[in-house]
Length: 343
Ligand code: NAD
Ligand code: TYD
Image 1 (cartoon, helix red, strand yellow):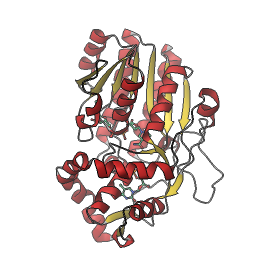
Image 2 (tube, protein in one colour):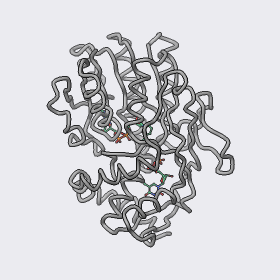
Image 3 (tube, helix red, strand yellow):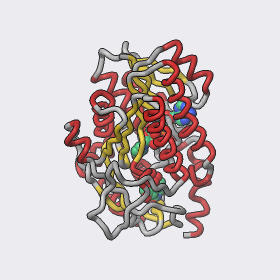
């Protein structure tokens, strides 16, 4: 089968491309990515010469380009990771989130309608369900939890999900959606919490913690997300949504302190900064459906995944050092300059 993976030069997409190329040598994997600030071909280096792998640069929201690609390639499966993915950036500049996450998705769906497809899979997020209160640890997101978004990022992702389901119902397109909790692991761009803490702590730099650091995220090691998507794409039922998560809830402060301890760095590096506007309190997934229906099980817990992740950042300094030393320095100053002053 021929699979187009969009956003395959980003964090999760590059891990997924590597997973598919290695585990399915019988399949042809085309990595389609625009290479925005978040896309990096260094992240797919281990498979770049594999016979069943190819890279194509392009924009999922460019209709002419996408239709031409479908005409030429006649793909069997699309797995759509391509997105603007950072909540803080969506607060500063929402428009690109609508273009990529919504228009990009509908463009791909229209191409699937025109050229036919065996499966369109949308990679979505737990953030479409909004947040849960901190004092109700008994509550979890299920696939039936209503969509109730907080940020421009999650609103654009939820909107895309609604279009995917509408194309299933209206045009009978064979779709699936997976919604995953926060990922961490190799090739994670250092603007996100875990790689930001690792890279800054290694450089003895201040670590910005939003508000009181009491917000809770449900962390999943990235290859466990990849194995779940692989199962949904190949065995999941058309028109269904599958939640993915491994019951690894931690407060942000716990995450930061765990990493500082592992790196033998002092907690005095922590700097409390002005909170993110609209900051979701708690995410927590109920993955019962994918576990019982498809037999998915994560390989890592937070306690086993974090040391592996830290070791990867120690062994692959080159990968992240040129990011944190380049354009990203400007981003950090813009995003945090005021917040650090106001804290
Ligand atoms: P990322 O920002 O690391 O990567 C996004 C990739 O998409 C980049 O390679 C970028 O170049 C590419 N891209 C952006 N705009 C494009 C366009 N118009 N056309 C083609 N390519 C484009 O994101 P990520 O963290 O790997 O997330 C991937 C997907 O998984 C997203 O859809 C995100 O919503 C979802 N998700 C992420 C998490 C998480 O914790 N990171 C959790 C659940 C779901
Ligand atoms: P992030 O990695 O941006 O993922 P998301 O917002 O999609 O969950 O942030 C994870 C949590 O960490 C979130 O509650 C915001 C918080 N955070 C900080 O406290 N400091 C930081 O510098 C960043 C990037 C995030």
